[in-house]
Structure formats: structure tokens, C-alpha cells
Length: 163
Image (cartoon, rainbow, N blue to C red; front, side, top):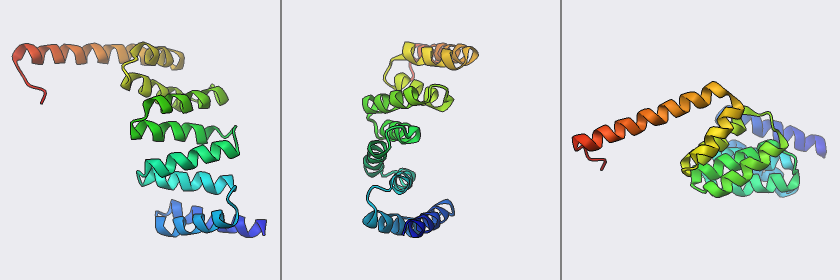
């Protein structure tokens, strides 16, 4: 029985990687009907929904995968990115922070969390993360922010509208 589920999951993943999303979706759902706590299937289905920009369904499934396997870093990480894309920045920060606690060396987590902080206007926290990640990266970010402010001030002085 477990071997059959693994074969089914491999087939679904193969369809998913090949872009045959309806076929992958059908198999994922069939597996979950028989084994609702199959964390690999829950996670893969969440990835499919995220790929289709169905952020609510994706977030629900990433949360479920994280409940089933609390140390699954990618469930927390992808939950954070899904919440960020849907505009739930506070939720994204929580999920990404948990991901960082589980995997403190992952640069992608630092970058996603810094993006959230920057989008929230919490630039000092974003910069701190970037400094931890790489000091030269943070210096470039400060320089880009200064240039953006200068361009904005120039446009205001010249009377350009931002609407």
C-alpha cells in the first residue's frame, strides 16, 4: 500500500515538473483522499497552488504541512512567501522567522524576510538582515535607497506627478 502511494506521488511529481498541472492535481487529491496526513503530498499540492497563484489554498496547505511536520523548513519558508505575495506581511514575517529559527544559515530566508520588512517600511530591520547575510549587499541597498529618494525629490521639484 505504501509503495503504491509512493508510485502515485512520483507520478504526480513527474506531471507537476512537466507542467501537466491538472494531472498532478488529480493525483495529489486522490492520494490525500486515502492518506490525508501524507506530508509530502500536502506540501507538493501547496506548491502547485502557489504556482497557480491560489495563495489561500497554498497557505492553508503549507500550514497543514507545517503542523504535520513542524521541522519542515520549506513548509514555513513557502508559507511565508505565499503570505507575502498575498499581502499578509505580518503572517509572512511570522512564518519566515520560524523558518530562520529552523535553518539559520539559509540565505533565501534572510532575503525573503528582508523583503517583508522593507515592504512594511521597517528598513532598519531589513538592512540588519542583509548585513548579517552579506555586508556589501546591505551597503548597495542603502545606496539604492538613497538614489531612489534623490530621484523622488527631483521629480517633486520638477513637478512630475506620481499618479
